[in-house]
Length: 150
Ligand code: 4NP
Image (cartoon, rainbow, N blue to C red; front, top):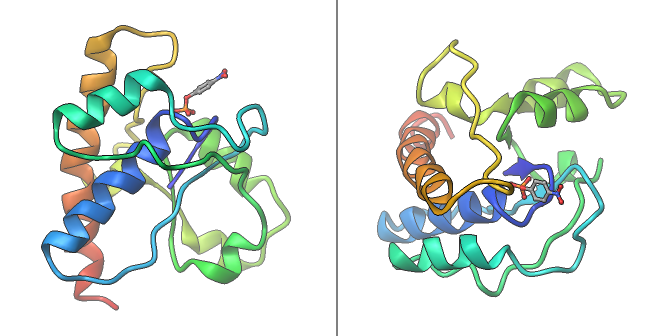
């Protein structure tokens, strides 16, 4: 799960997906990171921790890290939150197999529409709640789309 800072959207995506996988007794390896290096080592944004807690999702222990080429070795799928994140990863020198792994997350939920998870960083509490609701829907689709295929 990739966003810009790895303190708002992608740590929430990691937390929600892990919770859903546990509920379904699935054991995928999930992680999140940011394309930027601004927040390396920091906990998620307090507003996102609080929003997650409203839905009984605990992301308070996560720590931000930056995306790395080594992620292509570790992961089968790389989901980006918005088009900038997608392009930042696609801009790297990648082979075809690596390039295929990179996807816009919301296309799992609404295929082909190229919808984005909006960056809530400069937004209101409602923007954080909206991110939760979007990710909650989209991550059900991720599990439904990929569980049977693996
Ligand atoms: P995220 O949100 O990419 O969802 O973690 C942001 C966090 C920090 C900044 C931008 C977006 N920032 O500019 O510091």
